[in-house]
Image 1 (cartoon, rainbow, N blue to C red):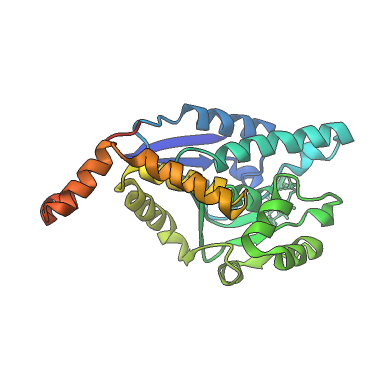
Image 2: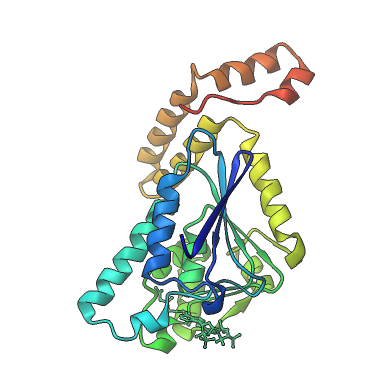
Length: 263
Ligand code: CAA
């Protein structure tokens, strides 16, 4: 692959968008490679993913403006679908995904971070949806996910004004969970991913599905979704080991619980 690197560090997979000459902007090839990378993640040996950008200046500076500049209406729609399909794959990926936002997260960059489960960023991160300044709407889910994450009023302000916001404001409005000095960002992302990976993998996957699916329906349906995913955890080796250790009051063992059953 030319623009995506994938590294496995224990149970954690790190996906890096690596097109620094264009500040990691998303062209069709990057989207195709990201799609292929996700398809190739080994779900039996991986428990969490981190998504970041190469270099220290930019996470992802948006969709590729050069590629978009000559598109027809139909091609524009198809390009939107291409991005949306990959981002939806990321959003519904069976494993938790942490976006480690290390600089510009503009347009498609902000949008891809919002397709991840959790966002943390460096102090130099800049978020924004500058599309209306380019004569287009956000096209990779920004109108939908930003409104869901920070509320319609704040999302509309950011999108209509096309004003970028710095890391501290992104934190204040709840777009990111934490802000770290740039040199600590990956270490913190790995620490969080490692903490997730130390928990029962079936339970973590079911939590992601319960939260994602439940948010799409009313509460009566949502709690049924939870009941089914809760029930699905029982009889797994993780559940037996996790609860058994507690009941045996075996603190040592409890600390050592290493869930191993993925299916
Ligand atoms: N597409 C294509 N190329 C891009 C790019 C993008 N989104 N963002 C940056 N680049 C390229 C620049 O063209 C430049 O290439 P050259 O060296 O070949 O000229 C290189 O990356 C470095 O960029 P700058 O020289 O502009 O760097 P800077 O530090 O002066 O500015 C920046 C950084 C503020 C991020 C600026 O590059 C910028 O404004 N980029 C565009 C951001 C943007 O508008 N993103 C939204 C795109 S639309 C979208 O994403 C639609 C959607 O929802 C799907």
